[in-house]
Length: 194
Image (tube, rainbow, N blue to C red; front, side, top):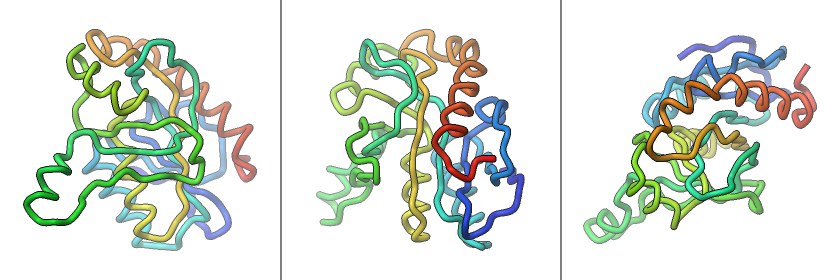
């Protein structure tokens, strides 16, 4: 976990997984790097929010894999789901729902599936494509932590690769381009960016 900048009530907190995704951010806003995966993301953000003060919002910027053909560019996410939590089985055991889909303030945006598995095979890609067009490894955890702290959250993802075979190689090759696109989106879309 790495936090740069000072969190204040009147400015958003930018949250990214790794430095490669943040390399072109040029802002005075606070930036939190959480590390990859749901546990790192949730722990880093929850710890930061618990220390206070709370930011005006949390904006998660990052890369995502495309699960369906033709998905490219930058997307503001409308709903986030957990693809690696067996919610149906847990509900049958306890009668409670864990990991329900979260609808965000940008509700008309696409659905993003979050899970700790890097989707690098075609069978997993096909299975997930029935649930969402995009996949990442942190957003659901970040949305949950922000909501529990009472902080509004936005999730913005730039497509880095077609999830499936070769995705890890493609991510390494495209992450700088993705980071540039995310920084440009932030500069245009976050009023307090400078």
